[in-house]
Image (cartoon, rainbow, N blue to C red; front, top):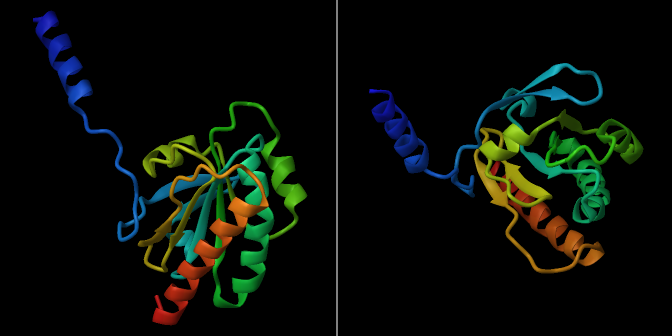
Length: 175
C-alpha cells in the first residue's frame, strides 16, 4: 500500500504542470509580501489602489537591474501625477547583497517587497529584471521579453520605452 501511495505521489508531482508565464491580458496573481523598509504586510492588488503599476523583480547583484533602476526612478517621477506606483520585488538574491541598503541608496519612492522568490515563482519570472505593467484592475498590460543585449544603458532604455508605451496606452484608455 505504501509503495502505491508513493508511486501516486510521484506521478502527481511529475504530472503537475509547470508554472505558466503571466502574460499580457492575464490577471496578475494576488500576493501578500513584506515591505523591505518597515516590515509591514503589503497586499496585491490592494497596493495599487486601482491605478496602473510597474512591477520590477530585481536583485542587488544583477547588472541589468542596476541599469534599469534609474529608468524606474524616471518613470516614477514622470507618472506620479497619474498615481502610477513602482512595486519592486527583491528576488533571486542568493544572499549576496543588502537589499534594504540598496533600496535606500536608490532614493526614490517605491514599494519594495523583501524575500519575494515565491512571488517571482507565481509570476514565472525566470530572469531578472522581471518587468511587468499592470492596469488598475491587476490585468497585465506588458511583460518584458527576453533579450540578448548586454547589460547597460541601451537595454535599460529599450525597456524604459516599452514600459512607458504600455503606461501611456493604459492612461489613454483610462484603465
